[in-house]
Image (cartoon, rainbow, N blue to C red; front, side):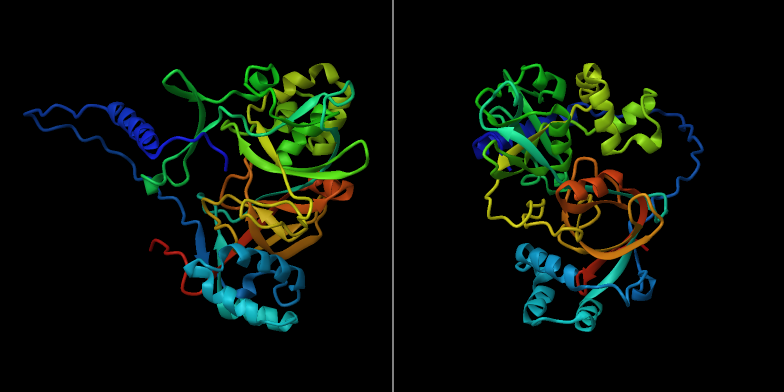
Length: 399
């Protein structure tokens, strides 16, 4: 991750300042009174349901019949990142000893080495939203022309990332992004402000592309390829984000009465943009989140996910890492886009995304190209998830 370089002492001061400000905002202690206080009767609040429950292999739909060969390729990629972590050393070492295993051997490997845990939402439900993403291709250029005029930016020099986890481990999921304004840290510019030229981004353009809505969806997907005028393809991937929350423009179009629910797919939004170019900028500004990119080596077989390994087409998913550990096998039970045909598959949690929030929530990576984009754009299914934890490293559940 890219961030502004500060000394260790400066980072400590920033962290302490933030904690100090939070402490200053705490309410004062109530005064001591001589009369007995009135204790209000507060109805009990049910605690949230634990995100996991121990399951059994026979609970995983089609577990005995699914093809595990493509899963094995994706699992091998996860082990490249996890093999030195204590919880994963054993299973990754055993995996490296298997030579061209068949489905029977692979099924035995997972059953012997892992325990399946079903994932639940805080309200106790087991169903969640499963969407899709892919690696799009955009037409672009390295210089601005009349045709190519929408910039694809590298990380700004003034984007500050404050990671407090080194000092306060309990804040490991909190990353603050902003910029310095005098001696204050303020939020970084929103999408509308970046598009209006308020951010110091001149000279940070990696490429210029011809279509604003295609660039918007590239930011949602997080990676893609740029086809240059000579026909060569260049890979780009996620580098950083401006710190603002993702807002769905599809949902906004539904709220505005511009699209029906069934029309608010990626393809439907693109058609709307073609028909209403005068409204496009105002619509895109509804999502303040903005993604910055980096150029990737062309030798990569696929985009790099948040785990740092190449994704595997149709066998990698993006998850919320606050619940699902990155790199873990996840059994996904859902349906193919816009159908009731079962899609039951052992996937690998190898990526994250700004819109992927919640326990039973996943984004299915469909691969590169137009057909992958069709599947990804249509996918908005309900599904269930089971995480496979290495034996000996299972989560501790509240009793």
